[in-house]
Image 1 (cartoon, rainbow, N blue to C red):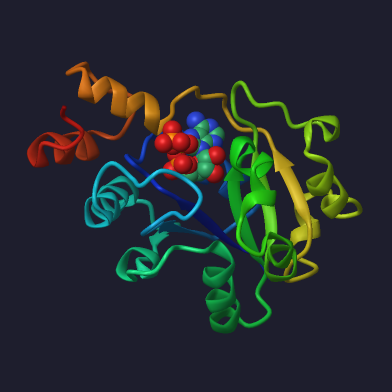
Image 2 (tube, rainbow, N blue to C red):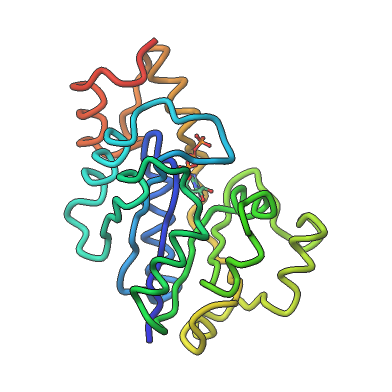
Length: 214
Ligand code: ATP
């Protein structure tokens, strides 16, 4: 069974780094669907700059037209903190034994051991880690407890993801794009151009709604 890709994030705002991550994961790891899951209240970082409803709408605009990309609004619809482990438990119940693949960039992966019930994630999903400019991902760079938890799970062959519902950690290289939402927020606040860093419909939405202005 081909895995269901899952891409969580704050998407404050969504940009081409996210879109290439999802597209290159789909291609490299042979996924038929990547489900985007904007976080409502991300527990382990500062509150997002704009409301969940705006971040959800920007993701909808960004993925429109790609039949392999879908949007899951459960986290933004809930008033509760968005714990990935709870989302994966819900999706596991919904998807049966279908392999689930939690996608993230290298920076997010390096911080995994701070996530709520992080050790339970490995029983619920595979993890797919994309390279990100400026972030080292060799085993020596992993925090010790994360390296220990990943021992025996690392496998860069995509087919390993199809033979079990969860438990493998695969790394994949994506086109290096040093775009971040923080950089975009700073640009937009300074009244500078965000064009070609995110999709036009998202940029137009930001303009219309007057988001990220100082
Ligand atoms: P911020 O700058 O506000 O921290 P961000 O650009 O990292 O935001 P998030 O919504 O926090 O965006 O990221 C969602 C996921 O996408 C994370 O797993 C993150 O590592 C990954 N990601 C974001 N941008 C890139 C990029 N340019 N290259 C690779 N991965 C990325």
